[in-house]
Length: 118
Image (cartoon, rainbow, N blue to C red; front, top):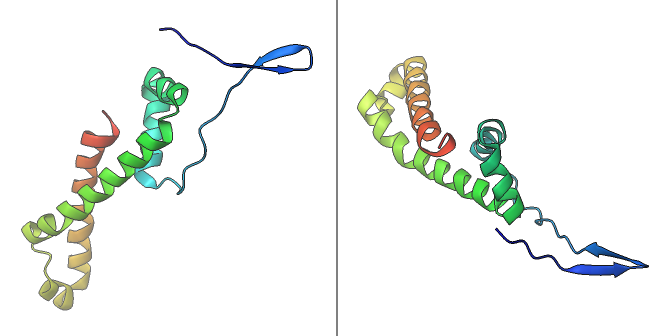
């Protein structure tokens, strides 16, 4: 791997012309932060590569978007299979909330396995 740097003369010294990645247009959500934490703690080499290439935040935002899309797409099917209908919501709201929480936990486990911890 060959790294080429540009240098800027400051006074009598040549300093590397380093730039940092600009902050993202939006902040990271739950899944982006979880991915960041996972990379730092369990995949430090991958994290360092993303930082050095300036692709870390783009990767984290992509992970965030993919996780949210997966959550939105899977929740209705999971809720339907679990029997969490509008009728149940009107008749027994506490049971409906419990079923929806269970469905969300199942979908989040899938998200963690497929997107966060890879």
